Image 1 (cartoon, rainbow over the protein chains, first blue to last red):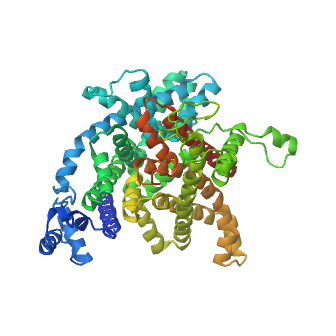
Image 2: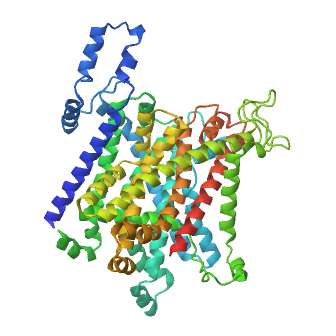
Image 3: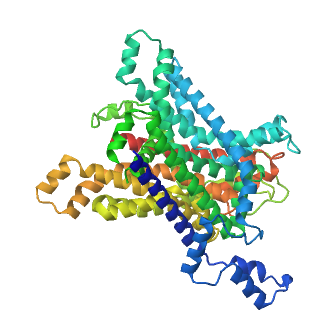
Length: 314
Length: 303
């Protein structure tokens, strides 16, 4: 078991390192030179020697291999470099922008869980086939909806038509309502689809037939026997959901003009601020790898059937 | 290796989940049962989906057939008109007809999506087939590379690539295509491995077929259906993602009609012109839903 865990952690580290390298190669290959763009500006009045000094301080002229090793060492010691555009450490920028995005995505995730569970429960409990198929097609609609359009539509309905949520100076909790709903709806779709499928699948298992034969009602079977078994496999898409949450945050923050990691990402793309963009990419890859690692290690804890097999594999 | 592969299979199953979406398991009668039965088997939803795609493709190819207005030149003193008999979907702040902009925008949005799917399909499927056929070390290397691509959230990856290539609709399309290489590779590999394990492939080898012949004659055709189904699904997804990049300002530059950009431009007139944002969004949803429905029908044909 512990050998399995060590191997699994090693793999995670390997993927993370590779993701770092990919993002480094990708972003260092950029033709534009953000340092020159910023400091060649005649208004700054910098001489060629001063620019050379600045370039040296960013290690911009050393060979790519040296830059790479330099960046690896810096990342390992928690130094993510300086934002070329803002001139502050990237780590500080990310830390400063993390809390609003964390709030937004946590609330969005919780709401999407609630939405997905409600849809799945409604479809499992619906007494008519037609109602069931209507409910089951809702996630497909959610998936096909552009997130930014949804946000704009919500602003239009709730702020402009119904005037429920003020556009100018809303209270902090009011300002969060629409972004959270915007983020939650598309994320709830894959969750709901997987839950519905799992419920359909578990309902065909023999133990459900046994429970029914013993006289259990449909609701009792769903709650006591099916729910637990149907929820577990949903864990496996944790990593994908995280990516979706982050992507959703970029778009949602752009639509609602919020500050956060999403806004920071957009700004760093606009300014070709490579150091910031690379740190965000590596940060999100690390989170993705960590989430998948946690899911892999926790899965046997929740599902005792997997314990024996995994030990044998290791 | 096992751990990552487990996640891999999980991911693939989820793709299949999305594929089959909200399917309601309508039983299909065995094929070749006569034309009467064939008519009985027509699924209205699927017909509708194909018609939507046909109309949008026609919009893209021959926009002038569908509107007499220009997509870029505005009509003076007709700014921000609500939908009317003259302008079916109203006009924008420069007096341009919204319907014309949507129709001309189909060309940009659709060709972008086709480029994106083309990149993912060609590169991803090739990688997957190589991995699935070669197995061993080559397989391991390719699939670890795929794992790495998958570990970076798709939007972030496409944003990085767009930063690298520069803004513009073709670059945005290529960026979106590159992010889908990983899932295509994964699907193609699993299909090749699946077909390879079947008895008729064994038989083909047994009767003296060379590897490349068996690959071309048996493995590829039998792997293709699910790859095509996935490509149709990716088409819808690419339209969505390209419109997102357009909305963020990384796609087509402003005068160009592109669906995401249309919505972004309409954002400044929310209070006065609801149609500018609402209608292009509905068009995107309908097209993406149709692509998904078509993909679903391919998925079912195999099952």
